[in-house]
Image (cartoon, rainbow, N blue to C red; front, side, top):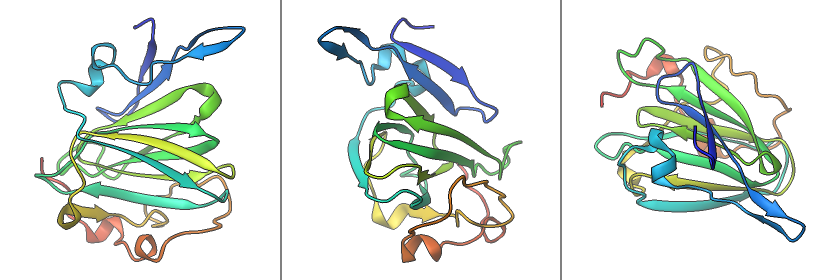
Length: 185
C-alpha cells in the first residue's frame, strides 16, 4: 500500500480501484492524481493522451467504448467534479470473466479512480449535473480502431442506477455483446 494511494483489486483481473490520499490543512489540500511509481497496476505503460470531459445532465449514459488492438488502451479514470457510476466490461477473448462487468461510483470528494486495462470497454452514467472526468490513456485515440458495446444490452444486465436522461445516437447504435467476438490482445 502506498501512502498516496490505496489500491483495491476487483473481481476482474487487471481492473483496479484506487483511492488517493490528499494531504491538507486549513488552506486546502495537495492531491497527487497519478504517479507511475505509486500505481503498480499501470505498469510501464506510457501516458499517451489525457482527456477531460464534461457532462451537463444527471442520468446521461456514455459508453461502453474501447479501442481494438493494436491501439488497445489502458485507462485511468477519475471524477473531478460530481459523481458517476463507472463500469468496466471484460471483452478479452478467452478470459474467464469475459462478458462480466465491474462498477464503482467515482465521486470527486472521495478522491477515487479506476484503472481499466486493455481488452475492456468503459462507460459511465452521471449521478449529478455538471460532471467533469479526467482520463489518462496509454495509447492515443485512433478513430479506425474505436469500438463499443451497447451499454443497455439486456444480456449484460448492467444495473444503471438512474433513469436514462441522455445518450448519443452513436452509443445507441453500438452492437450487443452476442454480436461481438471478443478482443484478442
